Amino acid sequence: MTQGNEPYIALSGIKKAYRIGGEMIPIFSGLDLTIPRGDFVAVMGPSGSGKSTLLNMLAGIDRPDGGTLRIGTSHLDQMGEAARAAWRAHNMGIVFQFYNLLPMLTAAENVELPLLLKPLTRKERRLRVERVLDLVGLSGREKQYPALMSGGQQQRVGIARAIVSDPGLLLCDEPTGDLDRKSADEVLEMLRFLNRQLEKTIIMVTHDPQAALYARRTLHLDKGDFIEEKRAA
Amino acid sequence: MTFFDLARKNAWRKPLRTVLLMISIAVAFLIYGLTASFLNGTQGAAGASDDLLGVTSASGRTQPLPIAAMSRITADLDVAAAGYVARLRGFVDVEKNFVAVSAADPGLLMAVNGKELGLTPALIDAIGQARDKVLVGRALAEAQGWIAGQRVTVTAFDMSRQDGSRDWRFEIAGIFEGENAATDTYFMIARYDYVNAARVRGKDTVDAFVVRPRAGVSPGELAARIDTLFSNSATPTRTQSERQFLEAFLRQYADIGLIVNLVVGAAFVTLLMIVVNTMVFAVRERTFEIGVLKTLGFSRLDIVALILGETLFVFAVGGGIGLALAKLAATFAGPALGLVFSTPVLVKALAIIAALGLATGVLPAFNAMRIPIITAFRTR
Ligand SMILES: Nc1ncnc2c1ncn2[C@@H]1O[C@H](COP(=O)(O)OP(=O)(O)OP(=O)(O)O)[C@@H](O)[C@H]1O
Ligand SMILES: [Mg+2]
Image 1 (tube, rainbow over the protein chains, first blue to last red):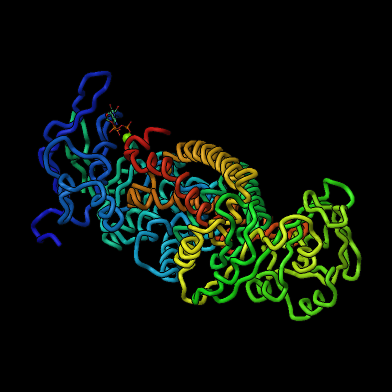
Image 2 (tube, rainbow over the protein chains, first blue to last red; image 1 turned 180 degrees about the vertical axis):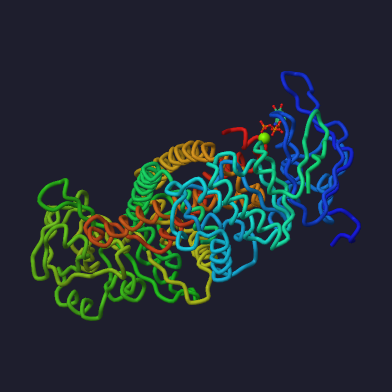
């Protein structure tokens, strides 16, 4: 556990550049960011500004070229691949724009996937899956395949999969980018519930200003740095 | 759901592809099961015992040994029982219809080799009734359609009778069954006293002695001792285990085992390439999803296990079907075709299934393991 005054997530001096056509294009050159536990942050910004890159580094699937990245007590910038995989399995859930469910698995099986990495019995896994599917309002659809579900339903399966291991951190990359307004609002309502009631820390990349309103605060990413949006209370 | 269920579901994503793979694997293992059972059954060597010794002339298997050597062999205290055999090779009716007659002392043969051949006191009694009685092996009797009580004439290739003819007339006293299906019973047993008295040349010689060592005695050491005993005699001997003897005997014609192994080996190598190729593509198609799994926390090892599980599953189902068919064929057509699907054949086949299942998964698994998540995500 982090101390009360120490932020849950701390990035400092993050550098990241991509080689594009033989030239190194810097995305971040010295990014600093802290996020307290229990926050719900919306990240906005123009296309190509590095929002996904930031999320990938937070998820431990991409590494900064320089700087330090700590989440809780884990220094992700110093951890090897195996350690980061294990860290992901226990500490982080991720929600994708296009859901990324496995087509040959039912809703329940998709949700169960992360639990295969945990020392749980078959029965314990089933109970947990039932509980989160119920939480996202999909009980009764356990045996349905993703192809037969609406986008909103698929994304709720995606959220159930992200929270089934009970991680403290939820990363969402445009979770409503592919949904109509009504489904989007349902999903966002759910994320707000997870943040308010279950105290998940959520970082959500979005292009939709409406979606950003569900967050506690919004950060605008531009030219490798953040500007915090001032919001009327 | 378990890890293995996940691997299995992955395999069934393209049912046609998986079924075709399983069929090729099944066919390969059906062929393997049949050829292995055939070698096992017909080559006799499988049914041959390792602790029976065959003593033949050191100058060649067709050179005779004096029957008098018998007493020197039985004088060795490590010999539990010994018998002798003179071979009469000939044909019945037409020259192609080859039959082998082993002329022996039935009582001694029973003591040495009775259990393996399936000789019973009743059979020994029956052959003792008259000098021209013979016992016919089950395989030979069935092939010729012979029954007990029937008279048969064997025309010898080289063993003439004193009356100038080469036709040996016998009366079938009984059929011996062999200990199990692997026992070679494609021959008949005649009485040495009768054959020896009637033949012109080679009187009082035998083609081989058969020796059973006492329990606990090393057959190899006894064999060496017997050969030393005769090394300075007029007829030096060469003593081998019955299995070695049979294998060497068969090899004189052609190393059928080697040829079959080469053919089956080539089939397996082809199979390996087909499955590796198919799996490499199957896994490449799933690169994005492997990225998703890694994002959820699946480690490199988990991914490797998943893909090896998938190839093992495909091989287990395909191989299982092939072996089941081979077993079926051996059960129903085994006695007629000489197929013996024994436990060693099965164990070896299962080992090959496991080895191929793992080998075919290694390359695709390695590929999948190495892809960085970021790269995997850029494939869509
Ligand atoms: N693996 C990579 N290799 C090379 N360049 C990359 C790689 N990943 C991202 N980039 C580049 O880095 C920049 C930032 O990409 P990123 O995906 O983080 O942007 P984004 O803010 O998420 O944009 P969008 O809103 O379109 O999703 C882009 O110019 C992109 O082309
Ligand atoms: Mg993006």
